[in-house]
Length: 456
Image (cartoon, rainbow, N blue to C red; front, top):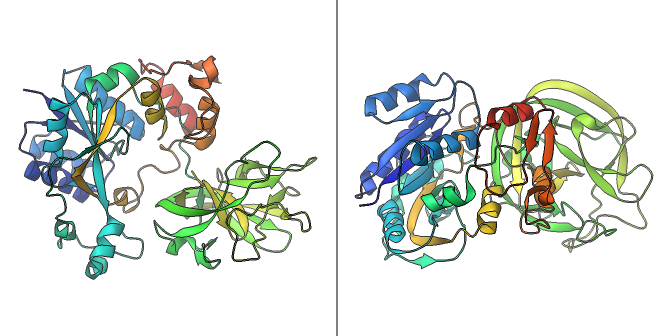
């Protein structure tokens, strides 16, 4: 009989973790063990509950981040023990009946290394059952768990349906055979833990050319996006239809940037803006803390309804304004959004947003994968992160697109390199060298790498 471990990373918000564990226990008939990582230092409520429930766990002494916690689970599953399968799930996930059983059954009977479940998430629930909107606030954060509205969904009751290949899910609910770890190794913790954030009142240009405050923007909304990078050398970026894919609330050290026409924007110090090159045509991304008075920021000049695909650079009108003042305004409540184009228009200024690396390495190393359409889970869309006081804030841990491009020679799906850093070792900082190896076999530099990004 196969041995299965279910691993969960937590960061506070015990009610979510309780629901996640309860759903596994109530819906899974096959044998399994739990192992949890308590990622939030001092989270005595979660620790006491895990001890009361007899669930094996470890506790981080500081916020070492999600990738580090995942690597702790890998170690427990395949270094300290010898499990056949590891199911990684989020602690903001509710497992539907037969989901994990189906993952294990397909793992037992098929040769796939990586088997993904299928998501039913909060937006779909509220579209299908609008009467439950009263249990959530305007940002889709749950305000009342007692209604258990996710139980209204019953479309999970279907025969096992395998589709693939494809890595449709990474860490929300997916089963990994030991072969994945043997081929790919550990999660790369070398990604800049950046959330590129703006304050809630910042106006965002929606796809119907109306301004909407960032606080009121929802996951799934259509907005005016911008190419993160030009399609070809010397070409201009274009406006693109974009979808908001994720959103979370954080706190960050902020700057107020004021332009020559009086408009201003408040953002985290690591937020990226598109600025004009000083001595040539074209634009480049620069973090807010590296801007200075006199630099010229790209502004939006959309003037017609058919804007999708239109170049942002105009022959007839300048599409930039000079910075006249930059002020340090301290710690602020901010919001990070992820959009499909990686860039968007905030208060008329072209702005950037913030783990594809494990997928890329797995694909390059021949990991086989599939998705089960019947193995369903309900996803609160990381409400556990920004419903409390934040887990992966400005410290931890989301893949930064700039580092990804540097490592792989292009954005996800357009990589130019088949080996990390094009086959050359990369010096991250004195004493820390990132090897050009697709498989990460060791964790010996892990804390040094994390500390480097924390201190930036």
